[in-house]
Image (cartoon, helix red, strand yellow):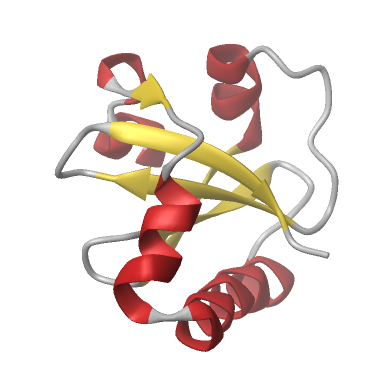
Length: 99
């Protein structure tokens, strides 16, 4: 099974509220640390064919096929430092660029 099917992107809606809601829930410093850990996973085990995913409910991280994200979101390219934020609870995703 591909990792993109684990996240059921087709069932997710796009959101602009996941990141601010996450910050409000756990605080800015912990939220930034979670993003940093996702980006660290990408740098250690990922490739230009993957993008890190931050799973909000568990603060877990995973890697997903970048082409699946590109196809679903409709962006022509994904740059380094990008993280897909995923909420399984509300079935929503948000693309975040870490500065």
